[in-house]
Length: 450
View 1 (tube, rainbow, N blue to C red):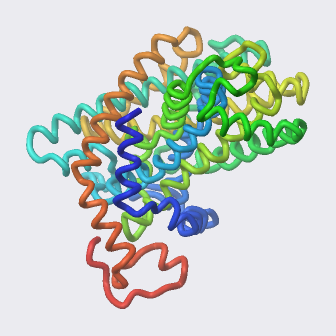
View 2 (view 1 turned 90 degrees about the vertical axis):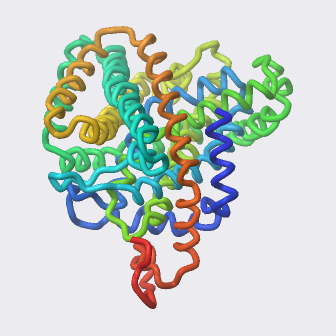
């Protein structure tokens, strides 16, 4: 937590807070490509497609259960610190995307590939760099690619078993089959499904959540009050029912926020590395929009669902708090809505995690290892549907922790390169950028950095 937040503050200061000054440009770059034609392929994908893939990995059941856990463990004030962590995390994820773009490579078969393993190697030459990069790749394949298949398969199966009474194993087999059909179609099909799922799942959850919130509109201002007072005087909130202090509010808010938006974990750079942009900082601006949407929009919907509906007083925890709010608002239909949201959130995460794992399998073992990796993902989706995965969550946390430390070391190692690219992007009129194309601006010369 200290490492991630500290890194976010460091890059925010050195880069001059791009998440504030260039937020409008981030919106332009991210959504300008929404209507663009052209499928993703081995030569890369559009900025929008990379953004959607990153969002698919970031937005998951953690956005439904994470805020509830933060509130019950750290009180409503934890949400304030969740916002703080996301704000600084926007600079971290900007830096990850810039680094991933700068050091992406073209493999022997023409496939564009990139991610932390490549910029870690650039940061530390020789054996040390190779060891750190390979370790990161192994940790991501296990702790993100395979673990996501197991955990998200379990989440979907449990949700549908509870809502529709279907045998979890049957759901797992169907999920595995769907996963194989999509991933065997290559990056074109993976990205095609993700870019279709992401807008739908976000709009569905946001609209349903807003209905719940506005049904309890009189509690919106009290909810804000609980958050801001609870951040600094937790005992003064809800009659002291949470029984926690500022330390707990900060700890759980910052931790859950960083876990939700994945800034600094090293996962999303795999998607941002393959975007077709003219300058690395173009994709950096796109990247921090994913944190904004993940935390400040989708995650906040869950926060205000829980606080305005009062389900935090039920004695329950986790996703149950959100489910109770939906049940109170929609009756039996509430469970169906949550199940549909969970399906899209979790299934898109499986696909994004597969893509991230694939990037590292290709780097470590080459194309010949892909059938084994694909078979493992499908198998673990089925296994996850029938077993309790509490131990896997713990294992996943450990591997993700290793990923974070190695990734952050790599970012600090090339921090001067990131800052230099950003200064060039902002100050050099001769540099060609995708943003200038969107704005219709012309350069007075050719690019010097690409």
